[in-house]
Length: 389
Image (cartoon, rainbow, N blue to C red):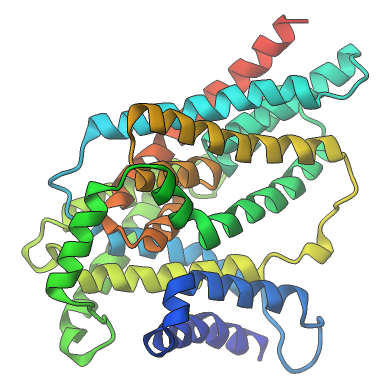
């Protein structure tokens, strides 16, 4: 029974919010994702467990959250215009984002390191610095690999994981509620966004669930399922531990989806992007529903919590300053920050918030580069800090 309730909840609530957004303009103004995030958090933290009426199956919730992103990426990319994409711009955005994270990570290391400067405490916080570098330039796969490489104790790793969920959750709330407004006010406008807005005005808003789009929608779903299946299968073959290799998975999803976008039936079809947007809404509801703060350890090693918060929001400020100097647009900076801090699977969410489908490729590229360099940067920084003792 819980399984059926969870499936109806995860698939039905986003669809309901999408329909209500057509009637109530305030939902569009605050964004449907903000509404879904609040609903998910309320479900996770306000409804008593085992109430006998409405219980979320955690395994099903995790499964749908994991499936939603591999489906959203191809659907959104197939609706993009890839002709005007600039490699030079992607590198500039990535390097400024990467530099911001590394600079703030090192500064924070010396600010938040415990007052006891014994070799043991220094080495322990250097391990935290190394793993944090891997998380916020790459993602969770880098986190586990660097933890093993630097020999971080299991207890410290548990604290770090818990605090990362808290801080990145706060960061995500900020992005969902205020990100678009803040970045677009502080930084230049995005050319891609202007193009997308013009196209949307010209063509109108497509609804992938309308009968008139049924054939195109089914084709988009079929191609997406094929891309996702091939990418997942290859990512399993490329992994040594039986779990999918995230770098390979995201890379293949992106490459195959871009290739599919050149197929005549799929060229720049708005309904494909909107269907991907629905998958993002499911993902957003799923991650919020999994965020039960009652189960988190908030009273462990608090300097680690402060350190992670300093890295995330300090790097955000520094990245905006770099972007102003180099005249990088706000949409690119926001999607780069999300790709580095939250990892590539969150890029479709940022693109949906910005209503800028052509920013997806840049964000995923930044995230993939971070995945590839994260381990080198984290382990390298660890040994550099030890050499300074």
